[in-house]
Amino acid sequence: MTDVGMFDKIIGALMKKVGHNVVGVTLMTSIIAMIAHLDGAGAATFLITVPDILPIYKKLKIRPTTLLLICVTSMGVMNLLPWGGPTMRAATVLGIEPNKLWMQILPMQIVGIIIALATAVFWGFVEKKCGAGVADGEEVSGTLQEETREYATPKLFWFNLILTLVVIVCLIFVKVPAYYVFMIGCAIALLVNFHGASLQNKIIKSHAGPAIMMSSTILCAGVFLGVMENTGIMNNMATVLAGFVPESMGRFLPIIIGVLAVPLTLMFDTDSFFFGLMPVLIEIAGKFGVLPAHIAIVMVVCRNCATFISPVVPATFLGIGLADVEIKDHIKRCFPWIWEVSIICLVAGLVLGVVRF
Image (cartoon, rainbow, N blue to C red; front, side):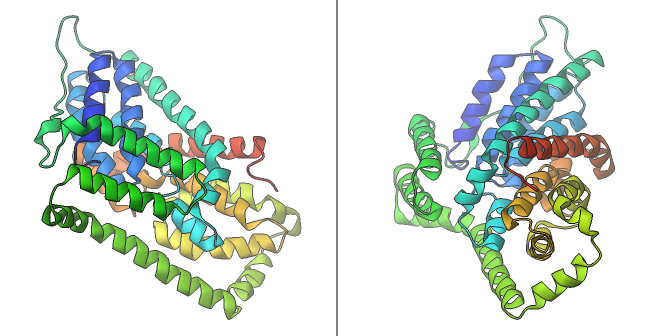
C-alpha cells in the first residue's frame, strides 16, 4: 500500500486540515505516524513521515527533536500489532499465534495510543509556549507529492483503503491464521494495482528480502530455543539465576522487568532481547509461579515504547538522519519521556488485569 501511494494521500489530506496550528500539526504528526506504521516497518514509517512533515516543522519553528519524540512514541505503541516484529518474536518464544498474544496486549495498546496522542498535544503546547508558529496570513505547506511514486494509483485509493481495513478487521475477528489473511489480501492488491506477471513479480521481489530475513530469523530462533529447552540447558540456567532473586521479590518480577525494559532496550537489539533474554526470564519467573504470558506481555509492551530511541536499532539512525538530529540529542530528549510512557502502560496493564503477579 505504500508503493501505490495510499498512505501519502491520507497524510496529505490530514495535513491540509490543520494549516499552521502548532498543536494541530503535532497531533496530526502522531496520527500520521500511527497510520504509516500499520505495516510494522520502522524504516518505512520514518521515510513516509519525516521528509514530508519536517519542512512544516521548520516553517513553524518547531524543534525536530519534538518531531522525532512524537513519531517514536506513536510508532512504539503501534508496533504491538500482531504482524510487528516484537509481537511475532514473543509469540514464537511462547509457542502461540501472534494474534492470541496481541488480543491480551490490546487493552494496554489502547492506553498507549491515548498516551501517544496526549504526548503530541502536550508537546504542541510546549512548542507554542517556546515561540513556535507563524504570523497570520503566512502560508505553510508541506512537500507531499503522492503522484511522484512510480507505482502510485490514486484512482484506486478507496479500493486500497477498504481492502486494508478489511484485512485488519479479519485479523482481529476472523479465527484463521494471520498468514492466510495476509496472503489473500496481498494477492488481491497485486492483481488490482499491478497488471502483468512481470510487474507483480518485481513488486514481490522488492519486498521479499525483509520478509525472508524475518522468517529465517524466527525459524532459526525456534530451533535454537527448542534445543535449549529439550536439553535442559534453559531450565538449569534459570535455576542458577533464580537463586540470586530473593524469595520475597520473585512474584514481583513482571513489575521489575517492566520498569527496566526501557534501559535494557538501549543495550539489547530486538533478537537478543526476545530470543536471548526473554526465555531465561520466563524460566526464572516460572520458579516463582509467574505465568510466561505475563513476562512476555510486559517485555513486549514496555520494551516497544523505546524501540526507536535505541542506538542498536538501525531504523533509529534513519530517523535521526532524515530529521538532521544527533543521536545524543534524540536520546536525551526522548528517553525520560518514553520511560514514563512505558511505566504508565505497565500500570495500566496491572490495573486492567492484563498483567498479574
